[in-house]
Image 1: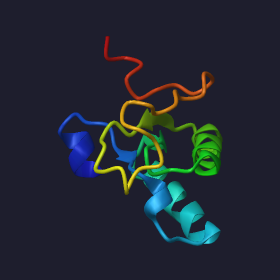
Image 2 (image 1 turned 90 degrees about the vertical axis):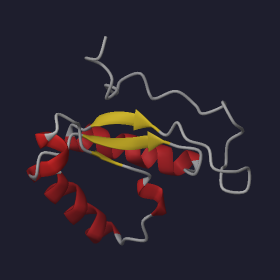
Image 3 (image 1 turned 45 degrees about the horizontal axis):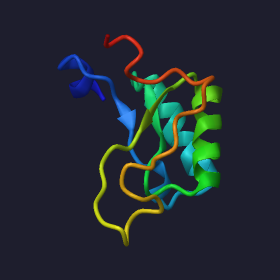
Image 4 (image 1 turned 60 degrees about the vertical axis):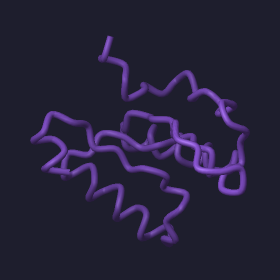
Length: 101
């Protein structure tokens, strides 16, 4: 996180649905990430289920994280969404790109 911030970037937890953590381990990850200066979480990706997207939207709300969307597509077997069909972020979440334009 320090290197990302030092380079002028924004640290975002990518594809959290792929991590095989317990709820307690996730809470520790999110707490430490926030303390280190992390600012965002990937809420929607092609690999997240609808329930996972809801869950990570709630994490963003609880921790004050910015929200991101996975824009990569590896293969039809790896994705739950068709190419180009990723759902939008919930309207109440601030996207990581909110200041870029």
